Length: 359
Ligand code: KG4
Ligand code: ZN
Image 1 (cartoon, rainbow, N blue to C red):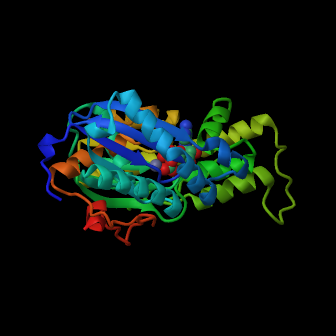
Image 2: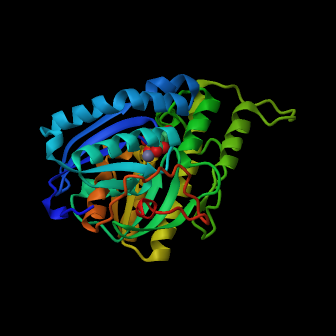
Image 3: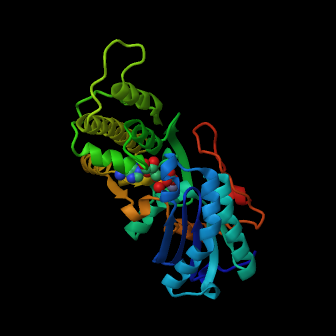
């Protein structure tokens, strides 16, 4: 499609990759005129995790009211919208399809360009949004319920995956450990709360891959170590310590300290290996207070600029899909038959970029 990027004033961005239905209106200067997020937290809480079918159905019910609300809060109408951005990868297939279908319909009806956004790259771009200025080149770190990915970001449209988890994501580990301890979902905030009253040195949990230079993470062994610490080692004659509130607090604090040590150490190694002086951190786990504090310390020592997305931009939202402006300016527009790419991004199995998928 022919379009003049300079003639576009407002972008409408949609996000429905997992369990938040979100829409935002962002202008060319990256001002967020509105950012509406409808969380499905209460729908999935009793299941201890996101149920894909429930998520898709909730997106279908909510996407139009959320778009209406975003337009209204921004004080614009659909006629003012010059482009539609939507997260097409990665995520739950049914959830992604709801956002993409809404986005395609709007692009077709309004006759405006459609931009396919990579949700993970958008999490890193959230830091650019918060900074209000260019922050590239940078190391990008996305640490969420589905991903623990390190990127070397040469520019807002050139992301190279340089590290990821070989099993569970960090947020997934928080959620599973919280389930083991019986303290609620989502696990991150629950563990952080309990950890405040606990001793981080009470249990010496493993810190997987801490001492090697590979930018790989692994959290499934740590999760098993928590299970054994809390419930006892199967077949062992030694009785586990009583499952008191204090024991839960101590295990929470010790687990959180182990995860944070590994996350911070790998960020430091990525910065060194790629000789970068900027670090951007996004995704739900970036809301963790201990992680934020230790990243501050590490980057101060290394004289590196740290950009952590503010709380509202850490968890899933559509404002971070403002990365679509960068794609629009380079003519990277999706065709109307673009599909979703649900698969997880894993090292060694390169994922096409949103633009490549768009063709
Ligand atoms: O980015 P996000 O909202 O969704 C995904 O794309 O996954 O991240 C959700 C994850 C959950 O696993 C949740 O437990 C974790 O972020 N999380 C936290 C905290 N707040 C949310 N983990 C640790 N500490 C927190 N304060
Ligand atoms: Zn996310």
